[in-house]
Image (cartoon, rainbow, N blue to C red; front, top):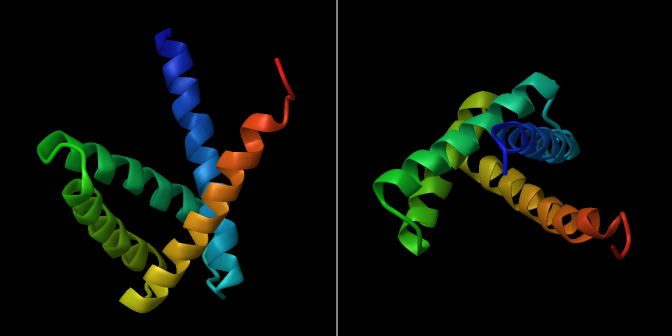
Amino acid sequence: MTFIGIVSGFFVSLVISAIIIYISAKLLGEEEGFGTAILVALSGAIIFALVSSFIGVGWVATLVGGIAWLIALGSFYKIGWIKSFVIALVIWVFAMLVSTVLPTIPGPL
């Protein structure tokens, strides 16, 4: 894969993640705009890249990265742990739906 393909894939993933975060936060009453959702998505990508670099992969890395991302989510949206966790659950459900539906949109190749 070329460098341009990797970079464009990253930005497409970032925008899709931000849309999911934005909708999830709006459903739970948050008033911040799409820019905040982009920052949360970008911080998540950075957090998980750093965690996987230092810890590796597996459930410990997932737990550490998830907690760090909940802290970031709470900081960007100025909310507590419980609401951060609920928003994260809604984001997870939407992400699962999108990751199931989006690849099948073009149909069989």
